[in-house]
Image 1 (cartoon, rainbow, N blue to C red):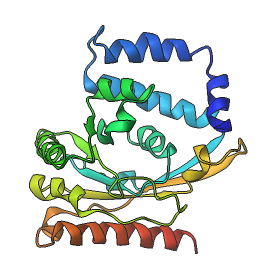
Image 2 (image 1 turned 90 degrees about the vertical axis):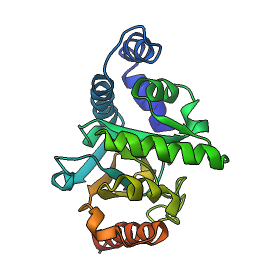
Image 3 (image 1 turned 30 degrees about the vertical axis):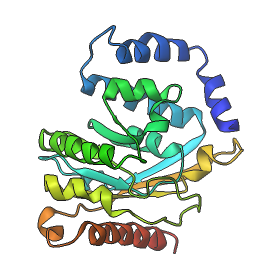
Length: 238
């Protein structure tokens, strides 16, 4: 919480303009930006937040992102900073599936409305099926998506939780590349009560093409993605 307070203090004069004039206007459709314009705004703000939060972000693997087609990004989940790291490093418009509770919280709900993110009710099987159908269609239409296969942050530092197979129904139906993303030490930013300088990492790994996973079940694909991220994190720690 100390680092969040630090960021707020360091952008106190810009915050009303960013939030009320820009973001809320976008979310309430008082102005009509495209989703790409809204994402570009969030991309810029995320980069500012990183600087103001005293965070050094190491990023690699952007060259692995497919250039000629949409894809599904599947990072491990460590904490509140994860989305900031993705926004800051991924300059192409990226849509998210958010849990319904998060999509209704202050500030995040305006981002979700602006960028038309899907608020998923994780307790509803029917809503899960609707989400898979909608996201699959949007990937086919050219939007890339990000979903955290663990469903919630691991709360175990750089140790991964179980990757759930349901996430990968979207990949199987859309036949898109799956891009594993390794987040390292991101939990140290907002989940530790300190404002000391911190170094975190985000690494976009090589995509898993449809031809590589088409014979796998969604659970097997989940295990494959989890193994690649886990192996990468272990190798980085050596």
